[in-house]
Length: 133
Image (cartoon, rainbow, N blue to C red; front, side, top):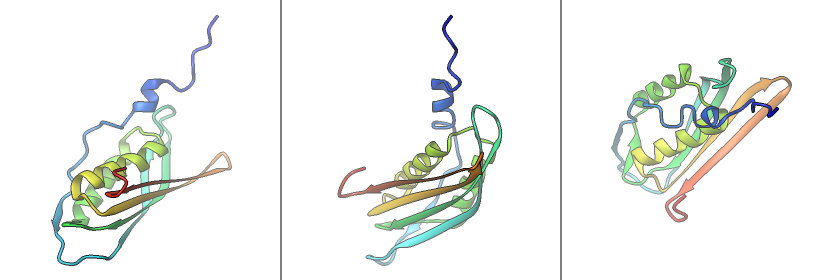
């Protein structure tokens, strides 16, 4: 008898395409500087267990023509609170949506999640116009 996998493709894709609030932008007036934004009380939900995930997200980006509007970014981040999505997907989706909104010169999202069962996890996703990814 074939054993059913604990984590399915449905779990893996959970939250990746869910609708989230728009991240607004405003015209940048300067060049050659980096912005760092920290969200110290980030929460989402494990798509398999339904248990909450707690962590800190740090976004570092070099703006090009646009800067991220902070209130809309906060509302965007808060929308993850009830979203079933793996931690790895949070970091990559957050980066994808920031790049789509602002088209920065470069960007990185670092997710540091509180230990679960004694295991601490930290993920980093990066993007730059030079690399195109």
